[in-house]
Length: 80
Length: 441
Image: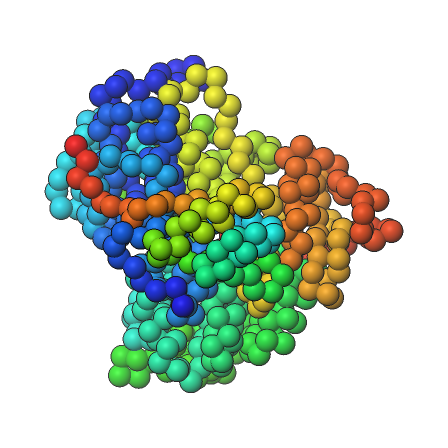
């Protein structure tokens, strides 16, 4: 279960068009990425900040550069 | 068309993005990454920041991902003013102003329209609003459907055998729920993939325990005391179900543009190849671009055929293209030519399609075999490679996508490692009526 996390967490999205199931992210951050069957990548889009190092390694180890990470929670600012 | 070009945006040019969507977010990011520092306002009709839709019909309704976990990462600090929960009500293109539902007026110098699409509702409003009847498009839809599936319904009825319908059916089986899928075509996904392939998919779907009722429409959704209790098929037979998921595709969100003078076709915003929107009477509006599910545009890879693509990857690529053009101007920027691509996870496999299958007259299985549930098939049209379908063969797909982009002959690659020694060519076998634009339904 990837739970709801509302504050000061990371955000992750994987381009699953690009993903080819090399599963390097699953080795780098096994609590956040999981391969099911041959090619179904399931991942936590809002991982806890305590996993930050592993998540960033996962993004760097992806052979097809499919993983986008934001270190802080997006915020709806007022702009200007 | 020189007159339709815009120069680099002035430093203080006001940019408004209508649609707090994937396409809107990526467009706004690209605008900033291209160096535009002027005021940026992003308008969304939902109260949520842009979120990712693909997990909704999979992990969210399965209960393994919280709906609000889908909020998308931002690639940089957008320094934007967000107007969330206040959709656009109208566009005054002469005054260059967006009017919001709450009456606020937002003047713009440059505008990106990325309002996406909404689930096509059941045609009978009284039936479609019975308790227990769902559509699935937004995050709140997914949360509501998740709650209904968690309440252990006796049977789930899925109306429509497109990708969303099949993904929901797959989740229902994973949850151990009895599920019936009703579709007017001879096999699920037949409109996009053709019967030669989808006939096999039908067998897998049935083997997973889905009751597949093909070749039939629905006469009615039936209710009692305001709650759905089932449906009546065309032949008068009935199916008892306490949850019904209407999965009949999506329609563009352009109601707010009626009366604006912009050209709409079947509800989609008509654009040129540079994502510039077209007016009904006076040509192009280069200061207004559109991206994602809302846009209808000529695809250069397919002889300029007008396409509307409901694809995640298209929302990203076209959003980025439009954002860059609004910030940097047109210059000699070539027309947008993003490869149509999408994926689906269902019944234990990953299905990926590159290109457009519409009008294909031949099909070759070039890797693996249909029987093994692991293959790569290529679609050809008039001797040219137009699409490639991967089922758990994703590592082969980029080579075939390159062939599609290069307009290579069909089949594009022969005598490759692991290919069958002779490539047989099949008829893709399109169901009647013939497929429309082969966007993901």
